[in-house]
Image: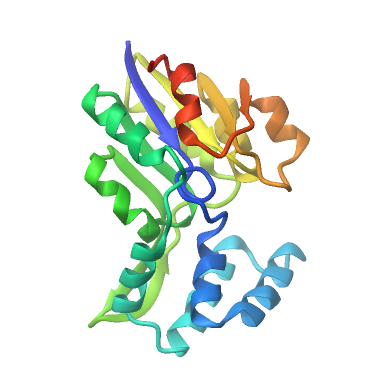
Length: 212
């Protein structure tokens, strides 16, 4: 049987818990970001509307493609992540990235040849931020993982994530690993996981993947 390991991005492959929050911090738009988050949590905006309003705020602030490129280089990988991804690549174990955050921030992991990177992609025109392609919402990972499974017969899927947005993916995966849970992770996510790894080193999930 083929194997596929799917990772969440923020808080799993990277140290920062949220790509949107990271960019707000870098570009001084945190107050506007907090106000938009309040509207999202009050159901005044859909996730797609929230993404587009957030990017519009960045666009009017003059953020460019070069700014985002610099931000991707500032992203710190989780301890053990480069070694684990290199090991998967070396052993020809397919892996992918599935994120409800900013997919552009996964650029540094392209060197390990992921099968796919699914998320929300910032778009540019003439070097300027122009919009966002909204591809993964916080409650859509299970459905997306199901569609990925439909294209891969006889594939055993391990999913590794850290937060509430991973709950549906945990349910869908053959093996679900809740890694370094964030402070807000709900009981539903804990219950849906097969294993909880209370560590900040992603290398500690290797035994679960039968990688010694």
